[in-house]
Each structure stands twice: as structure tokens, then as C-alpha cells.
Image (cartoon, rainbow, N blue to C red; front, side, top):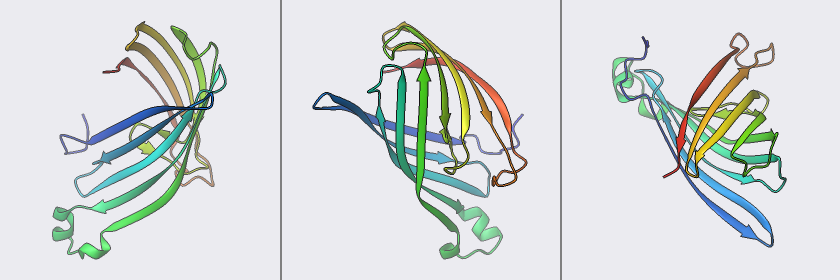
Length: 176
């Protein structure tokens, strides 16, 4: 049971396009996220990431995002907060992902090890990496079965000094 009273707690929209310039292939991903983590506040994120698979076994992504924490209208009214003081912006947050794979990118199955500062609905600061061990199996060209195991560290100089943990996620990705 969740302590969040919101029925719809988030939206994540990603659009991407691949480019080829003089034998250098890269992808551009634009994204927008809405995270309604409480009934008083919400977070929005938008940004852009560049992805390259130039090396056969390594994936690189680098990007930036713009994050806003906002107090919603209900909470502003209840706690008498002026609308001009209800938002906090973080601009130009660096995003990165480095993944080393056991097999080449186009293989039907693969295992990879990643270091990154973002995941679905969460983008951390530059110095807060997450570790990911991932496995995938391509059932069909547009249907992939996957299993991830994640670890997020904590530390004295980490803004989340007492937050660490691990989790597992599995599922099927369907590219429409």
C-alpha cells in the first residue's frame, strides 16, 4: 500500500531520433517527466541526452536537464504561500550513463554493467552515481525481456546521507 494519495503519480515522455554524420552514429533523446510524489508538491524535469554506441561493447550517454520543484495550488492555499515563492529551480544538471556490455549492441541477449546518475523518475546530482547490472533477451525485433538490479549508495557528503538501497526490476519493453 502506498502512502501517496495521488492516483496518477508520474508521466515520463521520451522522444528520440538517430543520426549518422560521417560514420559517427548518435541518438538524441528529448524528455519530459512529471513526478507527483506528494499531495502538496510535484517535480517536473525536462532535458536532452546524446547517446552513442560507437564502441561495440560500450554505450555512452551525456545530457542535461532542468528540474523544478513546485508547491501545488491546494497547498499554497492551505498554508498561505505566495505563488511567486512556490517554485525551486535547478538548471543544467549534468546527466551521464556509461554501460559496458558482454556482447555487441545488436546481440539477441546481453549482460551489461552501468554507472549512471539517472533512472525512470529520478535524476540525481553529478556525484551521486547508481550502479546497475542488467540483462536482456530480444524475443522479437521490437520486444525485449529485461531484468535489472540496481544499487544506490549513501555517504556523509551525499545529500541523501541516510538513503541507500538496492532494488530489482524486470519486464518487457515494446518499441512501437
